[in-house]
Image 1: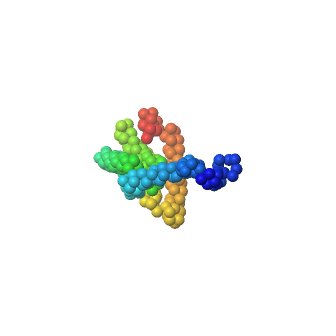
Image 2 (image 1 turned 45 degrees about the vertical axis):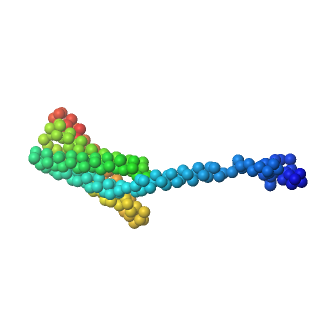
Image 3 (image 1 turned 90 degrees about the horizontal axis):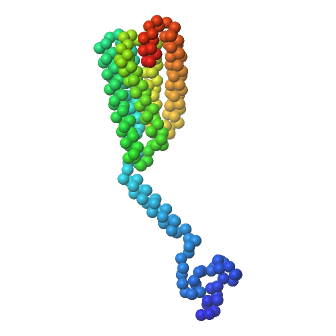
Length: 239
């Protein structure tokens, strides 16, 4: 027994020498405190819990479909605003198209709220959560601005609009229709041809935005040079 105990001792003075098992000389088997097994078990349990809760939540959600619906309302609202501007001299037509802008904005608000709810219920989203949040809020801002403009016209009791407003409305429609087109392609961005088409459409939107800036600057310059009625000037400047 003494010889067996001697054989189990490390040959060097270090108790951690290779081949040494703590407690072996006393017939005990102490656990290896340097083992990674406990941490591995914790990580495995955590992964299992994530997988379990992930199965309880939707994996993708219908985000792209909601984007498409919102884009449709954006285009509808922009077209209704243009018709309102083109028929502004007729009060019944003006009120009818203003109501259509408001209806499009309210319908889009419901979709925005649904996207926010879906973000909280979905385990895996097709895009980064922050990207989805910023995208749907930016889309919602488009219709909010259209509705705000139509309401300002009514609150300020504008009876006529300049051709510059109509031109800006036309550019707005063209931009919104391209936004609608891009939203319809988001689900297929992995396709190289689709991605290229989206980039080209975005470049078109950027050019249209530059066109709108030029029309806006020209309209403001003309307004302050030619409008003799101060009250009318303030109203049109707000619009």
